[in-house]
Every structure is written in structure tokens, then in C-alpha cells.
Image (cartoon, rainbow, N blue to C red; front, side):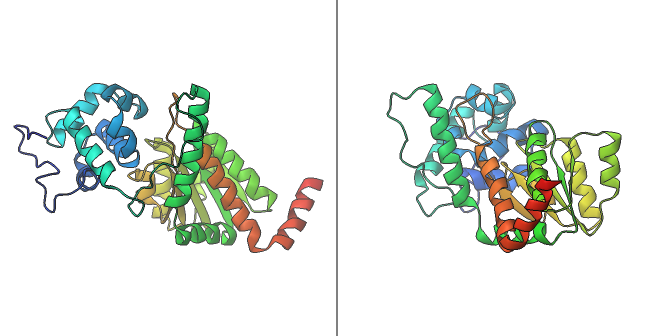
Length: 290
């Protein structure tokens, strides 16, 4: 890696010879909004950043290839190839005990179809998510849901479906749950009723919708317990939450994969159910007879 003419320190010249992902995290607040999208994606998908082209990375981070190049230069690299080399170096140094797990053996042969590649990626996403989640965070999330007087789930666009599904699962357990999926008058009314007895769950993928960020800020201001479920460890929604659960969304397809998110939501609901299965069975039966 050749240093650029910029005065910005590169990862190799930074104190302690920081790895690329650590260097990006340390400087995250300095980046522009579009550069933060690239930063989030690289940190959470280092394996893809190590081997994809700038165009492919830009598409997955929902930005332009020129933004990827400018982001590389903002870090002190001459361009994307130098950043990519740093990503490859870090990826190759990571072992089974590192912060990221290596991919499992492939489900299909090397001549797999696009369909099989998508299925294989989802398989790895679920495994990767399971490895990254800590038992203490999961237990804290289940405790928060089971003990909440009411639950408000915020998710817009593609996340609206998962917010609705989580609400459905909680209602089967006879737990009071509402959703905020758009800035409608009704939804804003629900936001106005957030208090210390309301558990606020924010769902986001990539750059969070302003409504989700607003919801989490309001919850924090009103001292409500908060839970973030997101695929971006540098997401503002995650930083605003007390409890954070991350899922992997890698895919060769043209949209993010939410297979691991679905598994995570169902596992959370099952965790709540398992706290008192006999009592919840009675509630589920009563709900279905309504």
C-alpha cells in the first residue's frame, strides 16, 4: 500500500498498526453520510470488501463507486485497490477465534447455480449470526420483552413486514404490542405514548430510516428500554439502543438477505415462550379461539 499525498494516517501508520475495520470504527464519525454507508458495509462484510470490485461493493452498500473511491482516499489510501488489499490482509489474519467466523463448507459444488448460491449464502448467514450473538444479549432481550408492559416495534419499508410478524408472534403470547411502520398520524400518536414502561424495538437494515432513528431517540429521551435489531454494527439505531442484536445479511442477490433476521425474530419469541410454556400455551389457545 502506497501512502497518498493526504496527511490522513493510513491503517499501517496508525498507532498500534490497527486493522482496517478497527481504523474505520475509530474514524467513523468523521465520514459523510454516504461514506458512513460504505464504512458500515465494509466493517460488517469484510469478506465481501476483500474480494469484490468497487462497483459491486457500491451496489451492496446502496451508493456509487465514486463514493467508494472517495471513502478509500478519506482513509489515506490512493484508491480502492489499496483499501481492498488492507481488507484482504485483515481477512486472512482472522482465524476461528477472531471477531468473525470463517465460512462453513459450501452446501453445493463449485459449479453451483445462482439459485444454489443464494441458498448457500442464507445458510452461512444463519450460522454467522448464531456465532456472533452473545447469550447475555439474547437473555437481556428476552427478559425485556417478557417483562414489558407494552412493546412498540418500529420498522419501515422492508422492515415493516418483520415488525408486523414480530408483533403477531408476541400477540400470540398475549403480549401487548404495536408497530410503527410509517409517519402516519396514528403511528405518531403511538410514539407520543412512549414511556418508561414501553419497550421500544427498532429494526433496520443498512442506513436506518429517519423515522426509526427518531423513534429510538425519543425512547432514549423518555428513559424507555430499547432494543435494536440490525445488520450494521455501526448503525445509529444500534448506538441509541441499550440492547443490541446483530444479524448477517450477505447475499449474491440484488437485495439484502433477511433469512437470519427471520430466524432471530422467531428464536426471540420462542425464548419468551419457553420462560413459561404451560401458561403461554393457555394464552395461545385463547387467542386462537377469539
